[in-house]
Amino acid sequence: MKLSERSGLDTGPEVVREALFVLRRRMVNRLEKVKPEQWFAPTRCAEWSVQDVVRHLVDFGRYDIARLTGSRELAFYEEQVFVPSRTPTAWLTRSAGQTPKETFAALARLGHEEYVSFGARIGRDDADLSGAVPQRQVHWSVRSLHVLWDAWLHERDLATVCGPAEPEDTDLFRLVIAYGLLLAAAVAVRTGPLPHATVLLAGAPDAAYRIGGDLWNVEVETLTAQDAATADGPRLAGTAPVVLDSLAGRGAPLAAVLSGPAPVLDRLMQFPRLMDPETFLSADDMGCGILPSCGCGSHAVATCS
Image (cartoon, rainbow, N blue to C red):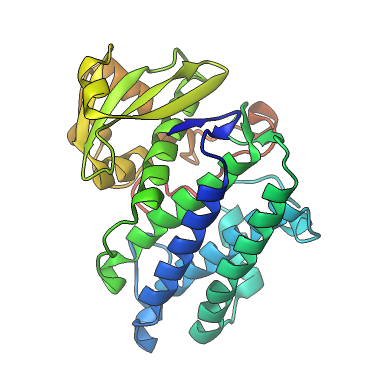
């Protein structure tokens, strides 16, 4: 499998649609077991309760549906310039006062609506590029991959209440890993060369992942064990979930969870720095359609759009 910024997945976007549906259903099944009082419990997002995180997931999912369909709701989400430390919390005002039961119902509806909207967008058979990573253009399905990645991270944010996630769905986890690496590399090229590398991750569904492409179109490709053994360039190694957490600004610093040449690791650590509210660039500097941070108060920065 190869994931490219400008053309999406070489297998087509349908796998993204299916993975989103699997993750939504998994989250609904896990939340069904949450006791009423646990909806107000703290999470890894220090400033958000369980219900706040789920309300955010609904917001971000509805934003994705609006982008897929061009619905009127898009105006609500793009009414103001996105500010990482404020905008997602401002979105939550629309669902303020919801009961946990209402929030749960909204998430349960989201999966079906998202699935239908994504299918309709596939039916248009277009290769539309839209702004995503600052100053970069990506295929429309790659933006939805960001939604998948974000939802997977937030599922882990709820582990203190919901317990560990089920065994990972192979296709879902492959996409989350590929996109997490793509995002880290795409942000890195804003300030320097592309960090070409072969990444070996324990617990991943593939032997290795190759970060490649060029400054204008970053790519991540899955590798077999044989291909990984003969791949040129730097080699990085770690454990999949904790590396993905670190790349997003959660948990331990990347150098503590991923082994490899220090210059390459430093290049891949740019995303949390970029999304730090203290260093966040203005929308004019970054171009349209930025990928925001949710400002939910997790370690470093939690990413959401």
